[in-house]
Amino acid sequence: MPSVPKGQRHPVELRERATRMVFEHQDEYPSQWKAICSIAEKLDVNRETLRVWVRRAETDAGQRPGLTTDERVKLRELERENKELRRANEILKAASAFFARELDPRLPK
Image (cartoon, rainbow, N blue to C red):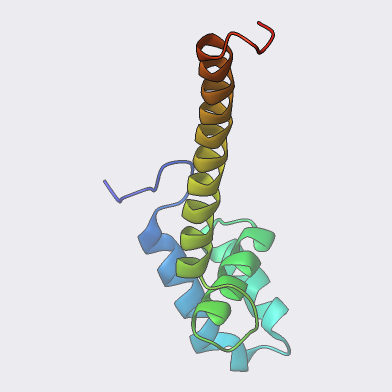
C-alpha cells in the first residue's frame, strides 16, 4: 500500500506524480491552471489540492517566494519547543515563589 503521511489523504507518490505531470505538460495548455484542472480530473484529485501541491513544489525549488517544506517543519518544531519552554518557565516561577514563601517566615503565605 502506498505511504500516506499521518493526517494526509493522498499518498506521497501521487503528490509527486501529479506535480511532475503539471510541470511536464503545462506548456501544452493555455495556462498552468488549465493544466492543473486537466491533470487533477485525470488523477481524481481536487483541483485546489493539486494547485497547493504545485505551489509548494515551486517554493521548495526556489521558483516562488515563501517558506520551504523543510523550513515549515523546522519552524513548527521551534514553535512547539518555545511553547514547552514558556510552560516550564511558568512552573519554575510558581515553584520558586512557593518555596520563597515557605522558607522566609516574613513573607505572607
